Amino acid sequence: MPPHSLQKQISIFLPIDDWRRLRAEAARLHLPITEVCRRWIRPGLSALKQESLSHDRAAPVDVA
Image (cartoon, rainbow, N blue to C red; front, top):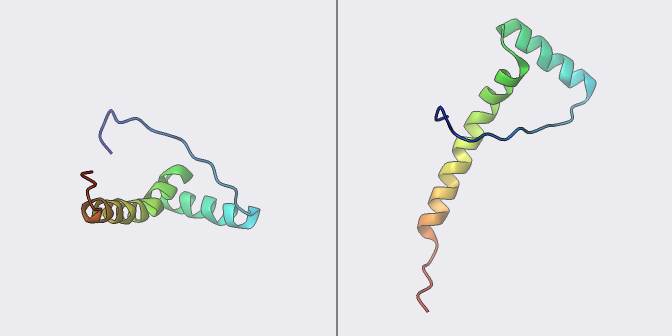
């Protein structure tokens, strides 16, 4: 992420058991839960960016 890019916070709801597993994984890695989530989300976001770029290049141009 560029150093001065705008950011937006998101929230999700998880079942308590899943949240506990996530918290345990973050503790095991000595990372905040937020960082664990970022690392898991990043590959999906990269794929979405590539998909979006491919779609933008394939879109026909309306010259009417």
